[in-house]
Length: 148
Image (tube, rainbow, N blue to C red; front, side):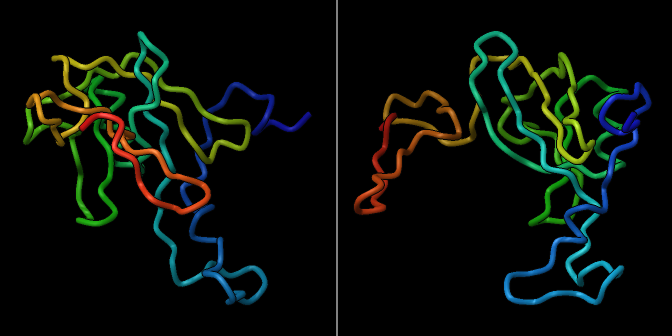
């Protein structure tokens, strides 16, 4: 039995993304690439609607803080800091449930907005949007705003 896939012990692999070489470059066998980040991707899903809100990252620190606080706390890879989603906009989230994939290298957080908003961007009616408010046209790659 593969204990990572079938066991009941949480063993998150925060190093897997770091072992993925940049395009066109292969690190020496057994060595992590220079892009080691110590983060896992997290799909964020609305607990009531099933809607995908966003895809982000967590590291061990953010993961443990989120579990303890039961709030959506992530790791910002662009700012290299803890990120409580919505802290500056007021559109914060309660963490309802956390799930892990079979390889324990990706997470799903089921969350509930404390207010009605999801994203920091707003439409013309000044209502917060879903973060996935633009559709990509497969023929032209143009973006179509679904919530102008």
